[in-house]
Image (cartoon, rainbow, N blue to C red; front, side, top):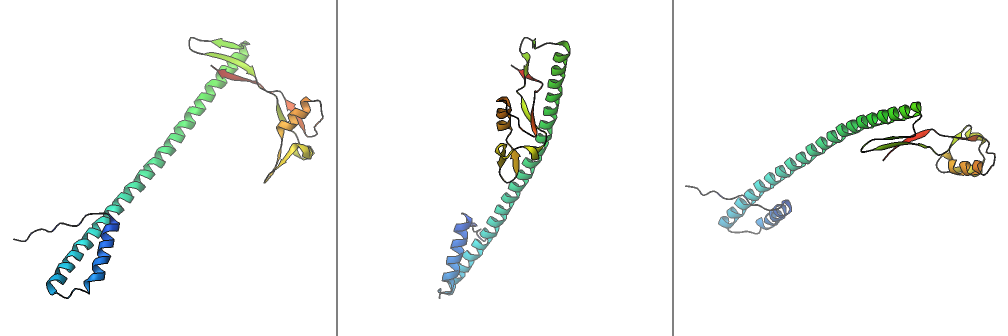
Length: 174
């Protein structure tokens, strides 16, 4: 009865390194018995290498599958987040509208208080071409420095192409 010979174990590097060493020394073996043993060992290590490569391939497939599943879950959660953001904004807008219609600056509940607060003035660019260079930032593209324009207008200066817009109230939740 033949005895089963175990397939070598170890890392891919160890298996490949051992195989290379066996191939390098095979031609130096003169004894037919030792050469046959070396060839049998090479056969076992070749089988181990094939199994290791297939195992690594299976693991890489698992990694790719997990990445695809994670991406699908991220996409699903982005849609879910967007849905909840829309719902939140609709409710905020509703409360804001109700408070403005009834003239309330504050609504109190047991667990929350809603207040309307004046939004800060913001710069409205009427014509970007008319705005002086001192109020423009140069980057890859030209943009208007609304902070500088707001400061200048608040100081009483006239800024061609811009004006201040007094914003609406915003809803604050505490």
